[in-house]
Image: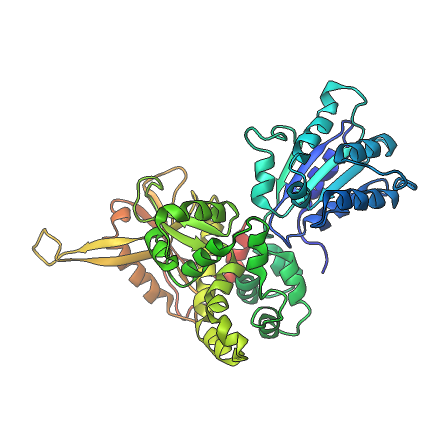
Length: 470
């Protein structure tokens, strides 16, 4: 697969590494996003790339000396007793403005917790003089929480980075173009592989989407069958709380109390792992449109990564079945429920397409869902006789006029009658508390061309993908 996207990151890296002054760069993000590939694309023949392993410090230093010797002959002759000595030796020997990349940096820190302080002293040579720093240094890692922690607050490397990159998954429009898929197929595949390059790279080896899902995910020997555990181990030794929380959310427990009940823990015990999962972008907090995150009691937790959402809905609950070789049973269940899964991803995609965008003659703020209860009255009575549960897929406020809102319905199913969908949506809006006294712009986000017209804007997958940020 060709290298996709990352133009902005490449430009920033090249600018920093080609500056007259030595640069210290920090790059991190979850595994399989292409961090190492990105770095290697901007290196030259005078630069050294080293990927650490889970081994003792002395072994790591010896391996680094051999990596440097591949570029600077004879460098591995001496024995280097410490990280400081080998890095300073490289700094003395290398060509001016050469780059030393220390990939999987957390492995190095696990074995030598003093390494960040050592690196601080070396990086600070840019300021205090002495021998001076002639080379660029790049540290990279998949342990998101450790990498973030190294450059925050009172940590030794705080304030030292010239560039800091937190690599995120690649957005849907790039995959649609790269894989030469029609928009509907791209949305469906994205709902499994997300924006992770290595997942798409493995998918390319199969003749069909169905074969790829079965071979990679619904198979004990599949490359992605144990993927969540691998990702969690990059950030924690005890991954049980993470896995339990994700399983609970995947099975439909979205409220804090429900998650706690499902995993058999108190809400206080879940505070830290939920915070960590949120920071790692595996889950997200969701509150109804228009309500304060701090004040509302309606907060829900959603799995925010397409692959993880797929895995914890269709794989984790059925591992015993898969282990018995009953994959066909899981596949049948998947066929029945897959459109519902895609529908949830489609809803999120549509929210992102609206957020901060100019659509339908308006500039919209961040879009989200609304859910809650609406009062139902009988004719002639002022007191509600009951309350009706309501939910809206896409709601956003006009950036310049708080009295104008967009309300949209998302459907990922066969062709339907747009006028009927719009009429149903308007009836719900008429009783929705957040919409009272507002001017409403209506929109339908549909998988298929509708069977009838409607007096509102209608966006199909091609239209939505064009509106997504790249």
